Image (cartoon, rainbow, N blue to C red):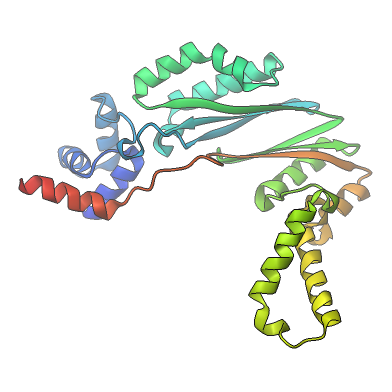
Amino acid sequence: MAEITAALVKELRERTGEGMMDCKKALTKAGGDIEKAIDDMRASGAIKAAKKAGNVAAEGAIAIKDDGKAAVIIEVNSQTDFLALQDDFKAFVAASVEKAFADKLTDVAPLIEAQEAARLVLVGKVGENVNIRRLKRIEGDVVGTYLHGNKIGVVVTLKGGDVELAKDIAMHVAASNPEFLFPSEVSAEAIEREKNVFLQLNEDKIKGKPAEIVEKMVGGRITKFLAEASLVEQAFVKNPEVKVGDLAKKAGAEIVSFTYFKVGDGIEKPVDNFADEVAAQLAAAKQ
C-alpha cells in the first residue's frame, strides 16, 4: 500500500474537486492508487461537482470544425478540468460542434436549445454543471484553424494563399494572442493609455530631458506597442525574421480576419485556498 501523503491527497482533490477528507478516504480505500481512487469515486457518484466553485463552469474545452472554406468554433464549459478530459464530456462537445457546423449556425442560442436534452443527461450522469457558452461561424476564401490542446482555438481567414498558410498563421495567433489585425485598428484611447503608462514607468529616465528626446522615446514605445498588439506587425513564431503580414504577402495572400477563443476567458473564477480548507477540516474534526 502506497503512503497517503498530503501531496497525493492534494493532487486527487485538484483532479476531482472533492474535499480533502473525502479524497484521503478514497485514497486509503484504494491503497494509495490515485487512478483507482478516481474510478471508485466516479463509480459511487462521489464526484458531484467542484464544491468550492459553486456552480461556476469556467473550465472546459474549445472545439472547431472546418472544411477549408468555413469553420465553426465553440466553447463548452465544465466546472472542473477533470470532467473536460473525460470521454462523456468530449463526446458531448464533439456532437455539439458537429451539429453547429452541419446546421450552419451563426448564433449559440439554437445550439443550446438543440443540445439541451443531451446536456441534461450529461449533467445528471456526471453531477457537474456543463454549459455551451459561445459560438462563432466564419466563412472566407481560405479558412485555416488551429487547436492548442482543448484550451485555445483559432480560426484565420485569408484572401488568396492556401489552408496550410492559414493554419500556420492560426498557430501563431494561438501563441501570441494579438489584440488587433492591423495597427490602424488600435484606438487613439489605447495608444494614449500606453503613452501615459510609459511616461509613468520611466519618470526618472525622462526627467530633465529635452521635449524632442522624450517625444522620440514615447514614439519608439508606441511603435513597439503597435507591433506587439497587431497581428500583421508581429514577428512570425516560426521565423522571427519575418512579420506575419509579410509572410502572407509573400504567399500572395491577405489576412482578412482572425478569431481567438480561450477556455474561461472573461469568466470570474472563485478563489479556492487549500490552506484555509485544511484548517477548516481540522477545526471541524476537533468538534
